[in-house]
Each structure stands twice: as C-alpha cells, then as structure tokens.
Image 1 (cartoon, rainbow, N blue to C red):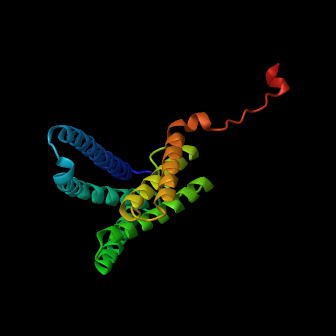
Image 2 (cartoon, helix red, strand yellow):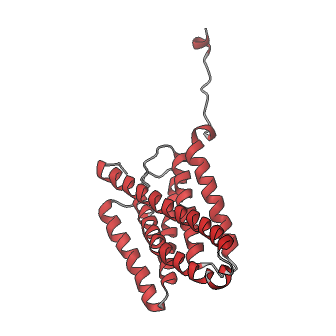
Image 3 (cartoon, helix red, strand yellow):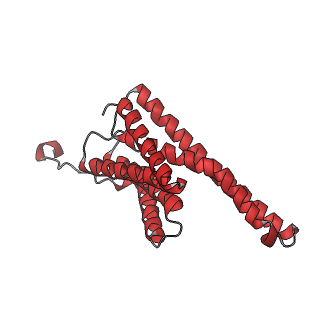
Length: 211
C-alpha cells in the first residue's frame, strides 16, 4: 500500500497523540508517587483516612486518559490494513461495538475490552501478513524485521491495555501480562536493532572478479 502525504500526516499525528498520552500517564504516576511518599511522612494516619480518596481522585484523572489512549491505539491498528476511507468505517464500527457492549452490560470496562479485542484481532492479522511479506500492511518504517517489530509492539500495547481494562481480577492476568511484555520488548528490539539482526547474504566472488 503506497504511503501518501495525507497518510503520513495521519500516522504521525496518531504517534504524537499516543506518546503524549503515555507521557501524561507517566507524569501522573510519578507525581502521585511523590505525593504519596510526602503525605505518608507528614500526615499521621493518612493511609487510614486519606488513601481511599486519593485513589479515587487518581483514577478519575487517569480514566479519560486511558480511554483516549485505548481509542487512539485502536485507530493505530486498522490503519495498517485499510485505506483512510475504509479506516474511518472500520474504526467507527469498532467504537459502535464497544459502545453496544457497554450499553448491554452497563460496564465501561467490558465495552473497552470488546473494543480492544477487535483491535487485537486486527493486529494479529497485521503481524501475520507482515511476516508473510504481504504488501497490504502500511508502515512508516521500512524493512520486514522493522515492520514486524512495530506490529509486535502495537500488539503488546493492545494486550497490556486489555490486562488493565479487563483482567485485573482474572487468573489470566499474569499470563497475558507477560505475553504482552515479551511482545513489547521483542517488538522494541526488532524495531530499533533490525539492521543488526538481519541476515545479509554475501554474494560469492567469481574468479574473473577476483583476478
């Protein structure tokens, strides 16, 4: 699939939004850790009367960021396979399914889990097509190993988000979490060190060339 300037702008915008959201969650976690450390040492008994309210406030701040991150990740996944016009329809369909599941179950986490499940299935197809050398998946990067690393990295992110949203109290939490960790680390290694891992074929030198 040929990259157009419009698609590159779309890819870049999604990348920037994803990085900003991940960064904001990281900053919130860091500041929350500092606040907890300071409060425990300065406010006697805070763990008993103030911690519950602190957790509720942190969750309220993080919730819209997590929802936005999940939606953006969901947009990042189908863009690998579809043109922008089809992408809008596919993404809208994923959102409708997520909202429908939320309405039916009256549970936001279940709706987000359904959305992520669809995103994960599409990403599995993306990785399979990339490994097979198909031309359909669209990437900013070049090279099959680099593209495979990017696909695995996205799949790891989707699985990690699924753990946070749907598996907090499930026996599947740790297996899925470690699978997501392996995919994320493996995808990162392939994305950044593909040139070192690639097998280069050395052409034999003929007798005429050697002389």
